[in-house]
Image (cartoon, rainbow, N blue to C red):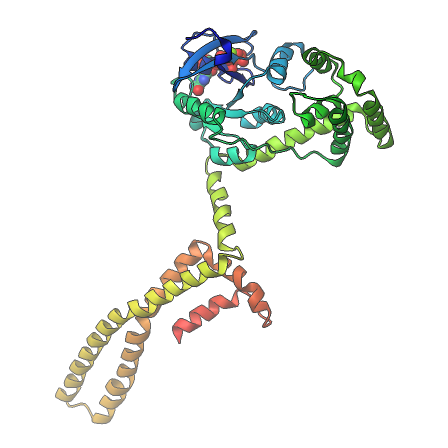
Length: 422
Ligand SMILES: Nc1nc2c(ncn2[C@@H]2O[C@H](COP(=O)(O)OP(=O)(O)OP(=O)(O)O)[C@@H](O)[C@H]2O)c(=O)[nH]1
Ligand SMILES: [Mg+2]
């Protein structure tokens, strides 16, 4: 391995404490970084190296942290490393059994607008607890690739290496999804953002993120930022910061209330994403149901799918009934012949025979052989649609149309049954 560190692609392995970062680090590098079942084992950043598909990677096991916004001294090292170190990619390790809590840090790291991959570790523990995570949906919400791992038995480690490579080579794109803050935050951010744009050139940090951090007025963060930049950005932005103070005063806001708004917004977004991507036990079926429902009742596909379903049922009913109808009529008319012979043999009067055999029996035989097979086919199929819950969707799809003639969408179902009976 060459010693020139410029040759290496640098990876920061970040995440909440005790989510398996060091175990992943060891699996990737073959090293033996200290792991154990208590939090805060990694207190300084360990560095390791590995090769993959001819490329050389340098990976840093960053100490665990819950937030980039905290004032805690313990978390400063991790925060500064994640925010200011010029890494090629950040792999955020999350605990599959505590996705919602872990998403807070994920969303904060995504705001940096850097290359990020989410590694959902402890997937085996999640399986045991019947926690089902829709990784594709999670990836869509976050705009970055999501890989599932069980670092203990190295499951998913190869996939993680491949995904890191595909993001580095831009084969997999990262979509920067801006977090939706309320108008007060956005106004405050825009004041600082315009100052940064006008006064500072060649800044290697996302300006929107930087403005968000500056309205937070976190002195520990500001010190680290000034160290990183090599000048006092607060002094440079004094005009904008006084404009911000005025804005806060005019709107009865404080730095604390702004900070609360930012944190609350991230927490509720985490909850929203968690509810859409993670489910316990059987609730996944509900989500699938909702997806199918959307298609079955959509303007575009609702009516064509309905016509297809009903067309198929009518076709099976009408053509499928021919064969049993024929069989039934043959059988019943064979019985009619036998009954006629019996009536003649025992010498029953022609009028009585006419009433019972040619009248009552023949009429019932016709009705049974013509109507029973289509009904025996149509009603079970219709019941099946009802059990699948499709009939209310048909009523919903046709409701607007039927309302035009002063009736209800449900009427379409009685019309379907009436058609078959006719
Ligand atoms: N079942 C299971 N256990 C895991 C997995 N990954 C890690 N562990 C275990 O989880 C515990 C914590 O793992 P660490 O790698 O030390 O976690 P960490 O994120 O480095 O923790 P800090 O350094 O304290 O932030 C250890 O006992 C690991 O063996 C996994 O995928 N499945
Ligand atoms: Mg560790």
